[in-house]
Length: 154
Image (cartoon, rainbow, N blue to C red; front, top):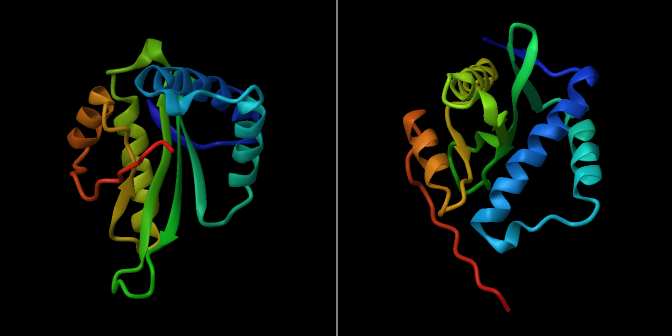
């Protein structure tokens, strides 16, 4: 398995994997219910990310077949924080038939290496609190609890 930069040839496969991920998140919380045109919006988002210099889309290839992707970007904390730049892993998905075989680790390693190559010394992400499998994965990658976001329906 290897991580490679995404190309236009990967876009529709990225959307397919995102649809798997989105369907899973819908089972965790009704908040994640997708709009009728969610896939089209995500497709536009992927295309936009490919044009932004501080964003990378990585793919995980296994024998030439794309089995996962990650979207990562360099963001800035407010100026009251001394260490402003940080890496943000916005999205990571591995095809359901290829999970638990190292593809996620390949993608996280590649994203962290990309951050480090740009002088970034901190990586952050958000994970749904009820996503036990996701939390376990991220903790296995060295991430720990940092901040809790609270929400309320109105």
